[in-house]
Length: 247
Ligand SMILES: [Mn+2]
Image (cartoon, rainbow, N blue to C red):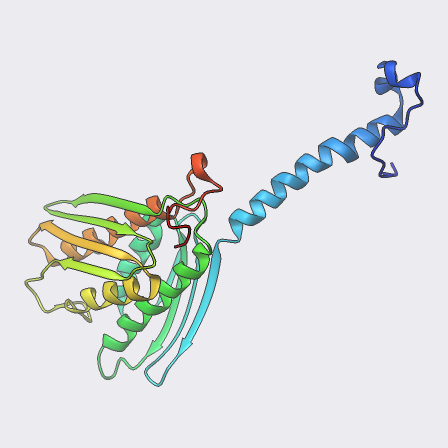
């Protein structure tokens, strides 16, 4: 079947009122497919392309770390973490899984010193990637919050992709390390993430005595809040969620 584009159906004046021709004439079917069906398919593909374009890849190299991060905000929570710090990988896995943001983080850092540079720089690169993937932020919900329990631990996270970096951190740990990760580095990570991502981020641990649970509940609550904030709101898909007109 050869598709010849024409804005008008291939009919003469009298044929235009004869609808039976639509069922018998190949040229008419071709015209219909070209002008309506293909147009609809193109629209869907175009829309999907816009959605799947909410991705970013960041590479960051300093004398201390070499990092590559990629994100897809419209993913399924696929995670591929390789930071050289087992417990940190486990936490980043939670962040991807429960935000439904596909995340890949590779870091070659100066772990012979300690994990500080690696954790902080991963936070910076991830924040940059999220910010870039969000683009102009049109149509997103912008705000997210989640109150998450994990056995005895409970953490609450509220965040805003405001482009104003601010961290409020109310969490403490009773042990110095989890695996190879110093527990004081959790705050460093979220500080870097909020700073580079332009996120107003409030993290509160409410209860808990197991440090693994406390840390994990914070990452999971952040993930769930992020999912809410970066998702597109179908009622405002073409609107910027700010009266200021910019975010
Ligand atoms: Mn765990």
